[in-house]
Length: 255
Ligand SMILES: [Zn+2]
Ligand SMILES: [Zn+2]
Image (cartoon, rainbow, N blue to C red; front, side, top):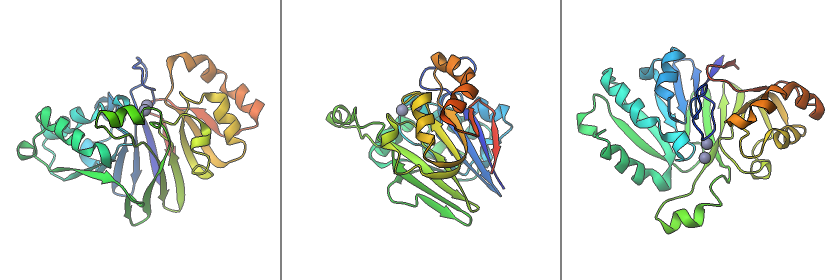
């Protein structure tokens, strides 16, 4: 059995009761972190997850709400004398910029108690080991900003994750603009972690009607979506969608 722990369920805007984007996947001796938004270190503490157990970090895209917690997490690992190496996968085109940024905040490899390596996300599978295969798909989230980003020497890659684990499938869409962008990648899943701050609840519920999803968790919530979140049982009934819930920090799913 594997476990998914939601450690940050807010959208880009910081709020009091949710941290920015992050979640943890545990299977056997493996612990992986997906995204590392602001507050991830404190969330790991409150979920009683030892940061030293995290063997790999996967960053979907480099918007602040998905990567801003990374430097403090690396510092926390250093201050608690981590020894084991850490791999951080992120979009290839922005890897050199993030590497320089980490140097700029003095996470200098020679002074760390452990080695961290930035790994470019390129081909599928991104990572594979016994019982686990981690693949990515482009979610179109940064397509609009891409020309301006490139003009400024910055990449515009953004990925969702399709994870096969112990014969089950977990999909994490990360951010996307419209369900059209992800429809060919999100067809079946045992657990779907789908962001809903861009497309909105109703578009996603409509999208779910034609999918074979065991359980869905609506993630990446804006404060103004609170009312809709409270009305989810009624909305879900309207669209005939079952096993759907709104994400909350600390929520655990066993798969
Ligand atoms: Zn986001
Ligand atoms: Zn984003």
